Image (cartoon, rainbow, N blue to C red; front, side, top):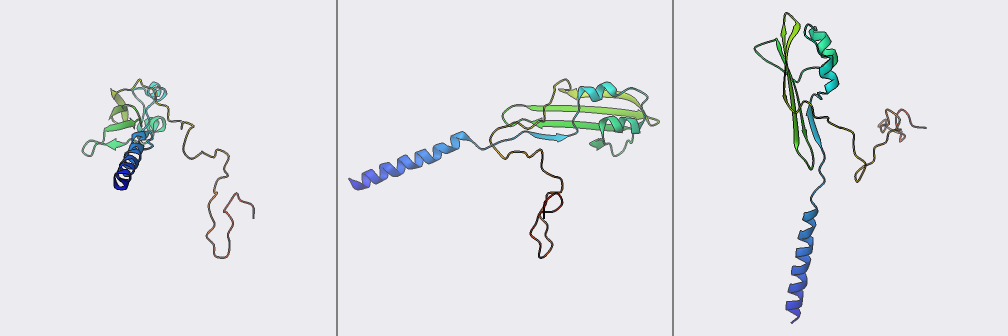
Length: 148
């Protein structure tokens, strides 16, 4: 009888422990590439130089290896508990001037990359810059920004 009770308790404990995986693991949004916003696209105009385009959009994610006249800006956001947002902007230059812009994906979709408050480590907005541990032998204080 005691073996039966031990077996039932063990089985019940095993079921309860395996039930913890129902909650899942913590996931977070995973942004990759160049962020492309409506404001950036509105600033682009045909005839702009490469330097002007780079000032507005940043460095291109991809430059075609055999054609210097095409830049690609790609953005992908894999939302933790949602969809995947994909945006792509292809810019074509002629004589170092912007002549064509082609967009693919969900260009009109606004992307909010602000961290959400909730479980997880809190972000310190007022932490002093350079707050690192000083590894100089014989010193145990924090680096710049810390009182000695």
